[in-house]
Image (cartoon, rainbow, N blue to C red; front, side, top):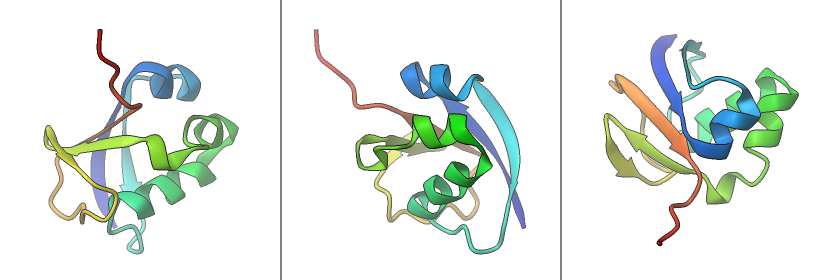
Length: 86
């Protein structure tokens, strides 16, 4: 089991109801995709926030990554919706 600090932005934060949290992750959670699947099991608010997980962007230690990226050694994982220009 590994512990990771998660940070949520924009409507992901609003739907989950918190800006950040520290979680102990089960051994099977090894990629961002695994993390998203795990988070959806934590309650309705997570399920609503991550319903369209394909549009969720992720960053590990402030570097943008895709959903196949391993999370081993991550100090911080940020989850946020797509950026819009303007």
